[in-house]
Length: 457
Length: 111
Image (cartoon, rainbow over all chains, first blue to last red; front, side):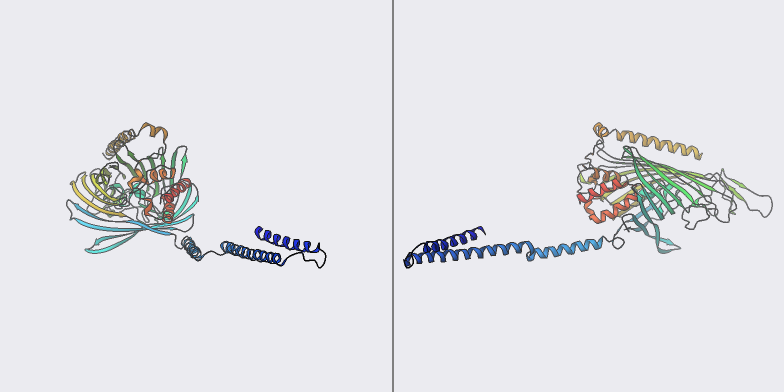
């Protein structure tokens, strides 16, 4: 722009100079020769042409500048469109309650060869649905599809392991309701999935069948965790339908945790308190108190379940690997009541069967209904070995026991030693091989070989 | 008889776990115990291709996950999938909000 002005000024100056010079001479006197006039005219035309070229170049530059500022190029427009599509897709996917779910879970196949029984394979798949309904409201459910043979006919067994909603009230409190894994001890809630459990089966006191504790409960809970200086604590309390007392059959005196319709208006109250003095160690105490009197039973019975658990998981430089130590101890104390004895009479040594003298009254069976069980488990994985093969190996030992009341029908104390070797294909895919030796007080001992291939997905 | 067995079994197990814990904890260096600094153990490397633990979120991730199960590679799930999984694990593992946020930030950064 400055150049243009300069040229215009020069031309104007030249013209003005010519005019002024012309006015200063007397009329009729030639002051400029033709040659000079032609030369000036030529200069003027040259300057004019140069100024025109400069103005056009300047206009082109301004047009280019304006185009850069307001009009992106075609590739840039295409890139912007793709980005917009991507953002719209992300917004669609993150719309709460529509697509915010994730399917995870586990599956396994197990081979069991137990002394005195036919060897057999079994298979289970357990998909878990995680659904994030909002940033505070969550839903989670696990379905378990298994196989069983009943009356000689193979069936697919479907079980709703748990299905519950949780609401995160604040940083330290979460409320929930539904069917949930019972926060009693640590095996049932944390360690039972086949890719987490380090052996092919559950400890005797924690199984679905014959176990002393509830694996899942139907009710409501409150739970959370909070720091205490450098340590940490966690808690979980629940109110549930609770178990019922088995008053008939071979399992008389045991607790049935699978009753989904409550048997009375008294709910079971339980929970677990955990304390972590250092991150590697967790100590826990669990309890559950409930009235277990079934409807129509004329005696009152309460049950108190208690448990302590200890976990120690660390990676040892000296031992060159990951150490995993677990200990759980469970006590079950059910009020003594008199059960109707079966006709054959199952009172064992130490039990007491009252034979009523009066005709027409049935025989009664009573015993001290206290049970206990637990396990100690040690696992070692040489994660720091130079050999890849060894890093994928894991060696596991478990000692479990079950002490049952003397006098209860078909109740025998049991002890079980299990030694296992695992090979991890990846962090959640494992092949397990285990040898078990079970001792039964007053019965025949037996051995078993169990193998399992499990995938967590 | 039963109670005697209970006591015997319990004492045996407690003795074993006590000895094991003391012995294994003694395997840590004094510096580790004194400082409790974020260490660089290879716990996180149980999952293939995972970087050593060096940050707060990574340390919390390793400590809380390994308490129950092996640690998966952060790349095994997308950021969005980790958000959902970790939201549920916050409830299951009784994590605090701070722990939840730190672990999530680490997983997203490592993914």
